[in-house]
Length: 156
Image 1: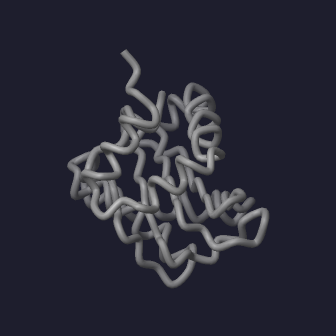
Image 2: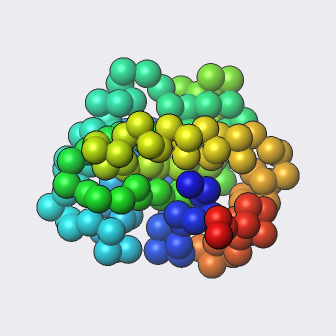
Image 3: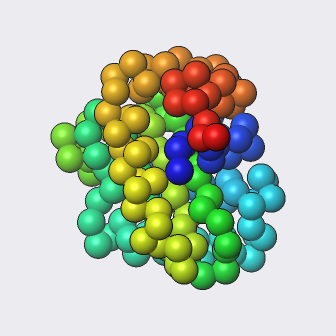
């Protein structure tokens, strides 16, 4: 599944404000509630799963990208959150650069293996400098969604 298929304006956090990656994970866990993707009662479970995954190995990549993800029970569909932090958040990325683009993936545990391809497609998309630059130039959530639609047309 493509990122452009997953992200709606309600799932964009711009700017993503967090003192560190642990605080960013909390924000990522809360955003889907406002989009109606899961109830507020699930937030602690999601946040804990993201933290446990992050403690096992950083999800900070290169080029200012982090893709925190976790599989949980209690949801039926993959939920993605796109956070843009122009100032950057220390995320223990592979190249040491602060993360400016954070894609959070909350995956139904029953469909965990099915979404490995989604994770790979997102990493491939964000490996393109023009994609990263375009996203970071967006002024609001609607511009982010429009940029994604242009850069990565939705699946048919």
